[in-house]
Image (cartoon, rainbow, N blue to C red; front, side, top):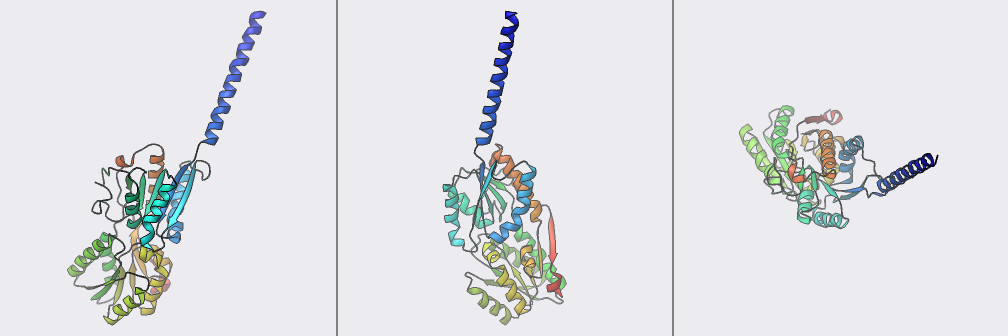
Length: 312
């Protein structure tokens, strides 16, 4: 009888220990600090569109904002000169990971930290610009996806040739604020020469330059417009589209948001696919993977977007 009572006491002790251990484990799980992901990009409007598939994919992977992940957002809204300041601000917030969109944002983040993981939503030529050592073996603390804006620029020119009969003069507006822009300009000039098109390059440095740039385009009798891309142009897309409509010139744009604002057409990467992939990069790194071991990807899907109302 004494043996049975002692045995029951031992069982009760074991059960109590198990309950205590489980409660401690649950408390630790609840009090674990959520991962902090910081976003640096061109504009809030751009982020709203691009981050929707990103957040959806994170939820599919088990992330719940406020429980196991939190976000901080910073936008430079076309003011490229403040990007380094915003990047340093995110560093001071002790982010676990920085997500960037655009060449300007990733370069500023790279200069701000060599330790915090950085995932590119898209950027220019990452190897040529010194962002990563190699696409297959990026090294350092940066990985993600790159844009092929310079390669797509030639295709956009060909699309304009299909739209405008006997096209011979095209104006390309570009901004020196984006380090990848010169590559876009050079590649477009090469394609234009091969197609027998006269390419008129017009530099735009400040918002006040847009009116003068369009007057120049009209004076030189351009028959169509192209834009080299970058955060500066993205921040002023509504104004650009309005000026293009006022000039009654067909225009090809570097992303579909211009078309949603009333622009004629865009030929670009599928950003929904890209930002779902970006979420998977973020997940892998938060689970312990090193950016240096994750190959940088080139886009795999493309989309041609046409605003039928503008076309009419």
